[in-house]
Amino acid sequence: MRDLWIFGYGSLIWRPGFTFEQAIPAILHGVHRSLCVYSWVHRGTQENPGLVFGLDKGGACIGRAFRIAPQNWQATLEYLREREQQTMVYLEAHRRVRLLDDEGTKVRAVTFVADQKHEQYAGALPLDKQLQIVKGAVGRSGANPEYVLNTHAHMKEMGIKDQNVEWLARRLAL
Image: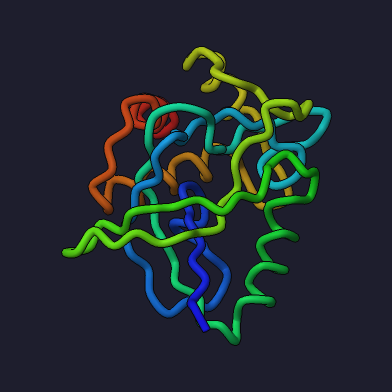
């Protein structure tokens, strides 16, 4: 049996919440990390939405690929679907990612891509608007600034540079 791989690019980088055998930096082409999803549950409410990361069309995204042992597949997928799909704003996708290991190994991974047709899809908001939304939102999983700052800190730890996330983090840390 083959292993299952999960590609994480936001909070999964720093809080996966599932058992994994290996976690390796990886790159996914064709999409990029963006605060393009209004959060009605985890980092905001329907009345006062926050913003969370989604994979949006174009570019590439460096994140973390998690190898899941076959005996943990079902439980891991159920957990992720419960966590990520509460409002069905993401499309579950199977994409080829390249591990940033010595061999550049390519694997198929499950990931969650922003559904541009969903009412929670925010698109490419100006940075000052993103900052305004993030600063004022709190959801079931906590304050929206904490989410952005944690993601930024772990991206930095992994050597991932993103000018937009860095700009937001500098202003949120004030």
